[in-house]
Amino acid sequence: MEQENAILALAALAQSTRLETFRLLVRHEPDGLPAGDIARALAVPHNTMSTHLNILARAGLISSERRSRLIVYRTDISRLRDLTLFLVKDCCGGNADLCTPLIAEISPCCSNESVTS
Image (tube, helix red, strand yellow):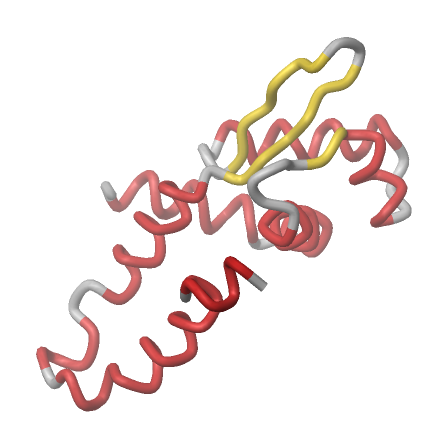
């Protein structure tokens, strides 16, 4: 990931409603959520939510898909991976032991056991 793309993504997440929106969408992968459901879940007016969703989409963190009359939003998991890797690429100066706790915290969400549960 280029530094400018990382800055754009981090800037998009540096606002509480957008961060909550992104985290909500991450929890609803892979199905995503319609825009109206997101707005209701976060108690945000629809037009305000639309602005936040557009900012997240321009940063490449989410994508939308029209399903009949609904617009369903999903996180771009590969973009999240790229951003995370960008942030920790040079983690701990090559000392793997220092990175072990970080990896352990990330791994449970992606293990086969949590996916099949």
